[in-house]
Image 1 (cartoon, rainbow, N blue to C red):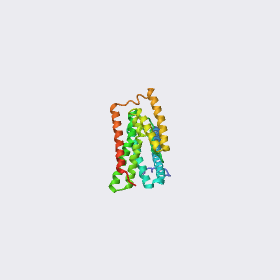
Image 2: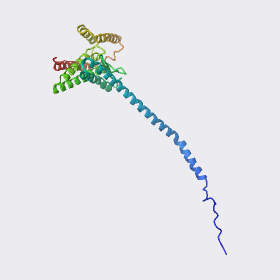
Image 3: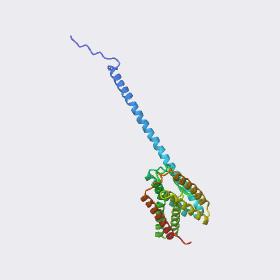
Image 4: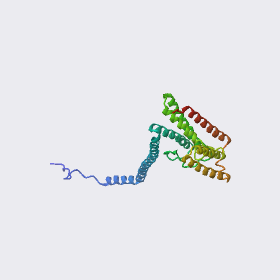
Length: 281
């Protein structure tokens, strides 16, 4: 009788595969990890850095916004003590519009700025983190505030006439007066920056005009402006005479004409606006 030998099986289960293929897979995976690990680390680092940079920019933006907002609230509170909160809000907003004019022109000229800060009873200010390239740029930045500010006051006047509001008319009157005052040709006022593109002798006219105004309406703020303006005018005059800033103050004739026409146009508009918006008490 013939028979076949039965298959011999492992008593504990199926045959165990050879470990060699697994070692090959492990070596390949390790090689891939070693190859791409630096690139992955760089990508992860860039992502983390980008997230931190975004948070930093967000913080800086919010810090600027917070500085402007808090100083605005402080000014509104200070002016409310004398004029009531409605007029105080309108007055601060008109100052904000004026400063926006400077900020927009600085951005056009590529000049980085500080946040807009409001100082109760002194007005508002926005700083330039870089000096203007020349007097022509300085004049444009200086006049941009009164231009936009006068347009803002005109908009308030139009609204006041439309709804017959003496409050809005009074706010518009103050806005026109604010922008007209800033046209005095004395640094640090806007008119003084415009005068830089015309002739340094214009600063002397501004000093004389401010002195006359101070004689009729004594005011400590005007005294500070007069002192600062006189020192700055003297410094610029000496630098110009010494030839240090000849290139800075070199302005083309057509540019001087543009500055002069803009200056006079704003001044006339403010005077007419004050005449129309004056409220009889």
